[in-house]
Image (cartoon, rainbow, N blue to C red; front, side):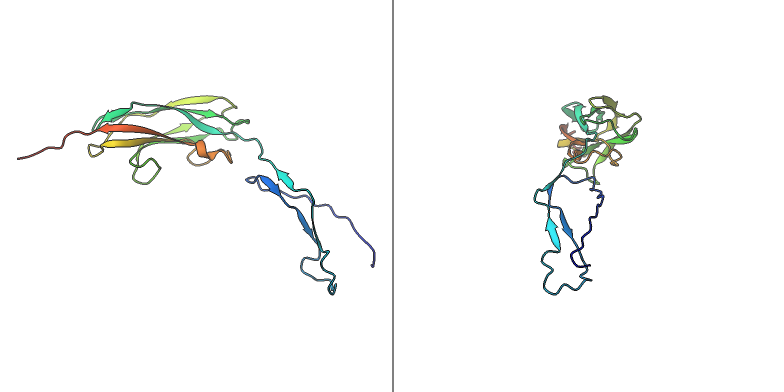
Length: 186
């Protein structure tokens, strides 16, 4: 009736992957089902203070060390050791994920990279804990020469919820491939 009012409480679910300050606006009669003539200007209100959404604590896997030679001979063998550390404030939310190591021409993971190794991790990490993995040896193709890159990627399938800390899941390490002279038939 005229002059009556009601109070309503709603619970909102905030998406997991947002943070920052947001305006909260409440609107009534959203579909304009009640005829109000020209008196619809008061059908919405914005809270005077922004709503601050902070990132929930999460694990944060990072490649903290890559151990390998600075150079290798074309046609020679290469193996890589690396260390993954949970730099976040919570333990990992899943105990299993996979890491990959590539030999790359361009420094980013692309289809033309050579997979040096794929290794599974079989235990969860508490904050500050780490593990060290080693790949098997691969033979560097004879056609490879000059400046190359070894790429180490942890949690390749994004099994661990690290948002927004995914940017340190890739480590890029330069390596020089000494060329073997090509045959010169005369």
